[in-house]
Length: 342
Ligand code: ASP
Image (cartoon, rainbow, N blue to C red):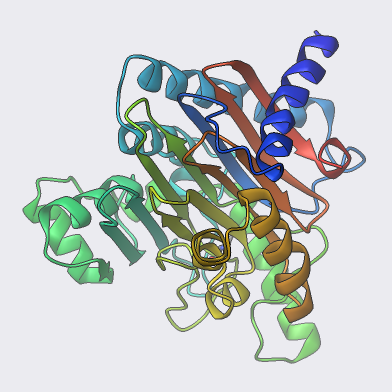
């Protein structure tokens, strides 16, 4: 089993290495890469039970996405479905497991982008939408706009026949406790700054990026944002070019981390632009942006991405990142900790 896993990892990274040699050959005819957030995720602070829970859920998501892509389904469908599954799980900071804002509400952000048309849709600060990624897709496909926020986004949802859920649907005890702790820390520091990142915290946003059999790329991201966010704060996840980007000429990317830095660094678009204008490979561009640029700004987090040739990258500058990958020629692989990447 371990050998199989190592072999699959080797095959994925063989794809990465082959592209650094400027071989413009496809390494996979379709593929999917997902994340469930980055942060202080280490073997020491993850119980075996927790590891199993995350591992099983991420594997289930990969298997579902694989089936869609293998049947000839679109990258967009695979991305939406995979994110729906993570939104419905309390394990992740999106949909059902979303963190609480300072006002005690769960304010959700999401975005989706299609690489062929460069069409995109996003929602921000919604409080009654069970699956924000699906609403983001509707914004892309059924509205003339890209980003809808708050009550407006929810009015649009109703017009589209999406049922609004009660705010109570998003309540989870563990996230509520985290808000109380964050508030306590804020009082202790007598500070206004709400987005302090405690070492125990992780960014649990979810995302997916896929390449389908037709050569189309898509990416999406969905989140509750950051615990104790104030004043209608919106992070990078619904911002195209910051939290999500897809372009058939380059790659599809979803990010997770401290959103303010991803917005200011225009992180996902930057990676795509380095490929498009500077001829960098996905791996080179991702490493440069996440390990050098983002770090130098003081930002933490990571990205998952797949390029138009099927090369996959999962790059982060935190201790760990919940992540997984499957392609037409490699078994599903789920990873969590940093040492597995290096
Ligand atoms: N990027 C998200 C935000 O800043 C948080 C996360 O990735 O978990 O809203």
